[in-house]
Image 1 (cartoon, rainbow, N blue to C red):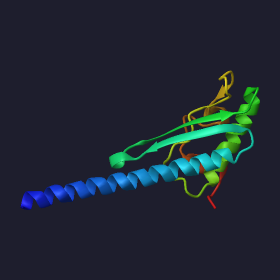
Image 2 (cartoon, helix red, strand yellow):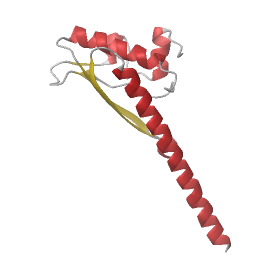
Image 3 (tube, one colour):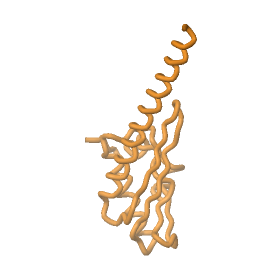
Image 4 (cartoon, rainbow, N blue to C red):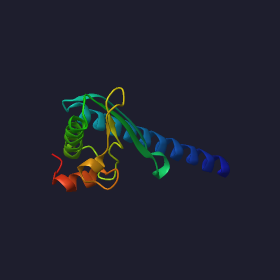
Length: 133
């Protein structure tokens, strides 16, 4: 009987953590997508957030309407500013690794804006001096 209680408690804990992670992932995906698609020049934006058992990832694909690198960089900067201003996004979450047009003839990354690597939301906020609303 004692082992049954331990097993049932373990199952409840695992299911609770999974449900919480799933809700957090949905909130992450929705908030990132809303911020990115609010920017003129974004053709589409998709996120995959996963926060299983304390780890996880944030992956994204942002398609911009740009014929030149300069246009793509301007859209990327607007997207990063929109992400920085979004109150539901956590400082530790990653921003997109790259931004590309539909046929991938133009691809840019945040290093074009002075970031050394893919910045987190918090790093973008600090870089632009943005406090979420």
